[in-house]
Image (cartoon, rainbow, N blue to C red; front, side):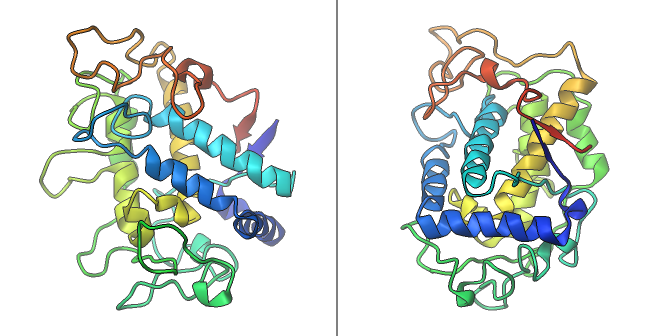
Amino acid sequence: MYTRKNQRALTGAEKKRFVGAVLELKRRGEYEEFVRVHTQYYVSDAEGGVRAGHMAPSFLPWHRRFLLDFERALQRVDPNVSVPYWDWTADRTPAAALWGEDFLGGTGRSGDQQVTTGPFAYRNGNWTIQGKVTAGKYLTRALGRPSAPIALPTKDELAWAMNETVYDAPPWDSTVATGFRNRLEGWTSGGAERWRNHNRVHRWIGGHMLGADSPNDPVFWLHHAFVDLLWDRWQRKHPKATYLPRSKLGAGDPQRGRALSLEEPMPPWNVTPSALLDHRDLYRYDA
């Protein structure tokens, strides 16, 4: 049992150990596999096949397992490291501590959005973007999206999701207007509030966080650790609620084989959502 801490509570030594473990995974060539897996399983409504990672009920258990795999890789480097979380309803500006030179570095420069500060700046020689999704070799960000400014989600906007009493609902995709999962994941149709909660955070950071290869930015893990914590809080707030759909969708349902029910295995692990509903035997949060 170990603890995931709020990033603002990390000591300087804890920040250094986390950064060091992430950089070591990069040096070993292991980090790119996490980027590849996330990119492969970013399947949208418009595409065929199973939607395990996004726009579907398994969004939360899939990312819980993904985070666990990453955390276990970090702990093979340093057993005392865990993934911290970023409460984006509280630390809401580019001046927040997580964007400091000693942790994740700051926003990208104007023009090419290249991150030039912190340990993940390309010019420091330890963080070169691999793969074919983007042409550049450097990490990019545009915190707050200066070209068309947006704000991080507020506590009230998060409450809009947390107050939902059911986990998910038909048609089990990005268009569903009710249910905790989609309100937290943040897909809505049109208007000024098109991006909500989890999705708005990706938009606010910009750069690599906009695409399927978003784990190229290490802030991805802190963001999703908070999303995982929010799922835990929602379960405690609504103890009678459960993962939906509980049973495999019927033969006539267009989402059959695309949206996974409670006991259908999630690729690439062959693990069911039911196996990931409770994390308390593995880790706890400090909040």
